[in-house]
Image (cartoon, rainbow, N blue to C red; front, side):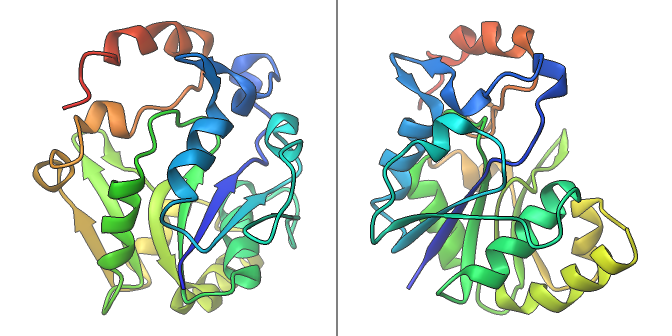
Length: 201
């Protein structure tokens, strides 16, 4: 069994508080694009957190459910903690709700690499991409410890557990890394998505 989790708990302060999951990309809201990709590879999909009303309006089903943060106000690390606590499998593909080009084949590849590694995370010249990564149940205790210590930087977890790095060369089998990992933090980044349309493969 495989799980996926869409993190929808952010306040989107750099986007004026807008619901980024509802932003329309190529004619569809981001959350609809993500669900279409992930539903083909995950047995369950969790929408985690209190934000993203567009995501939370999606009709729950046997495959899709919403999950609240267990430790509120702790950012993505708190969202990961909730996903790890609530997932029905032993690994979860975690993605931010503002990533419009999530690719199901790429998610499936990352999930397949979670054997000896507790984390499978892409890395580019921009650094780690922890909000498009796979985490196993082995992360739950270290994540809980970090929350208790208020060490909330998600990438700090990678020093605590066995981590498998996914390189740009590996990513390129599924599309341009700049497109696969694109997210929408600001209105300028949203406006710039058009430049990625020609970089599918």
